[in-house]
Length: 517
Ligand SMILES: *[C@@H]1O[C@H](CO)[C@@H](O)[C@H](O)[C@H]1NC(C)=O
Ligand SMILES: *[C@@H]1O[C@H](CO)[C@@H](O)[C@H](O)[C@H]1NC(C)=O
Ligand SMILES: *[C@@H]1O[C@H](CO)[C@@H](O)[C@H](O)[C@H]1NC(C)=O
Ligand SMILES: *[C@@H]1O[C@H](CO)[C@@H](O)[C@H](O)[C@H]1NC(C)=O
Ligand SMILES: *[C@@H]1O[C@H](CO)[C@@H](O)[C@H](O)[C@H]1NC(C)=O
Ligand SMILES: *[C@@H]1O[C@H](CO)[C@@H](O)[C@H](O)[C@H]1NC(C)=O
Ligand SMILES: *[C@@H]1O[C@H](CO)[C@@H](O)[C@H](O)[C@H]1NC(C)=O
Ligand SMILES: *[C@@H]1O[C@H](CO)[C@@H](O)[C@H](O)[C@H]1NC(C)=O
Image (tube, rainbow, N blue to C red; front, side):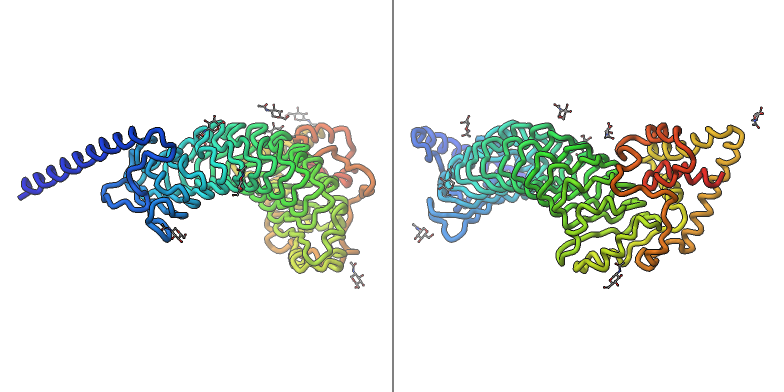
């Protein structure tokens, strides 16, 4: 019985192979015959493949007539199709196709962009390949198609965009590369794409962007780099993007923003930096963004903002700072954009920070009174602050985080270094006390030292001993400078200068320790 089935299978396979070979021979003959004809050389109407064994099947809209379909959806069932397989030539049977999609149904079945098929589709406007295993996008993969407007290669396994991957596509407006594994983009991967407006890299594995990667995409309006591994940006990263309106950098690993990072982007309206690891922002990081309206910095690790940070973005009317570790947001910080936060459609979101209850927060009362934005009112209504020195507990809270060990060390040592300056023996003793104090503070915090800012009468918000006049530059030079340096600066100052240093993390710890010694 089994042997008989095996025999039948054997016969069937042999038959299939012979059949396939004869098709190939026939194809080659046809090919020779028509080789002079540019659009020729096809054996099958791609919209009407009856051969059950075909590796590709397409379903076309409206018509199965040759030379008449405008839309085709193709399924790829079998792998191992050579790049120059005759099946690709068969696309010459439908030269009027405008929309073409490939759904790859078998794992690993399509590992390249079928340039050989696109070559015949001069009217094509949209191409979409999903679930393939394309790893590289090679030079001129889209066959220099003059009418192509959209290319989608989402959910493949692309790692590299080679030089000229997207080149000579005069009408292309949108390229979607979402959900791949892109690590490397050649600086000339996008070349001669003068109408490109939207470029999507969401969910890839980009960690560094080479200088000048976007130099040829000068009409880009929207660049989406959400969910990658980007950790560093510099002033040349976004070279060429003078028309960009929206830049999405959420969910990356950016930890500091240096000056002039976005200086090229002088038309940018929306900058999304939420869910990164931002700790330091240079006072001049946003310089040049004169059109910026919306900025999100939520879910980062910002403890303070340099006072002039928003000087360069005076058009800002939507600012999201939720879920950071801010212990102050001073009137100086907010002054350049305060008036923009009053209209109906403005937004200022501040929940989930570590604000200290002091007179630095007074402006929140005034803004709550004056703004017409319901979002801003709701947010201000729920902002809390801590009455006790909040920095100690926040520094303490950070200690167990493994990826911030270096930073925490600095903070910890910051306290100790200062104590050492007094008397070594006292220090040893005070270190123990320090920890106890921290714990005690944590306990009291849990008991409700957190207060709702707007429920504290503004007149009763305590001011630091010496307040900085708003016109003076802030005492500590630039919050970007590493903490060790700040500590060095500190050593030359008296104990009572603590009041000045209202928004410097390490110094507050130092001051706090001082007050208790
Ligand atoms: C081609 O399609 C058009 C409509 O898209 C139709 O009017 C025409 O009859 C079709 N021609 C053939 C030969 O099928
Ligand atoms: C596209 O154009 C470039 C430059 O003209 C040329 O080198 C390349 O061979 C063309 N590729 C295709 C597939 O037409
Ligand atoms: C872009 O597309 C339009 C219409 O689809 C066409 O008329 C024009 O020639 C194309 N541009 C180029 C440079 O080919
Ligand atoms: C992302 O890229 C890094 C190298 O930059 C590599 O080690 C890692 O395996 C990649 N992750 C994925 C999911 O491909
Ligand atoms: C990229 O530009 C930055 C800023 O000008 C520069 O410091 C860096 O060396 C450049 N990188 C390369 C690889 O050229
Ligand atoms: C809020 O507005 C009321 C009147 O509209 C005014 O009396 C009060 O002083 C204002 N409060 C603040 C903090 O500006
Ligand atoms: C500090 O301790 C050392 C021994 O550990 C001792 O010799 C020294 O006298 C002490 N100094 C003071 C100021 O107590
Ligand atoms: C930003 O981060 C990089 C990499 O960790 C570091 O080398 C650089 O000094 C940082 N820049 C500033 C201004 O802190």
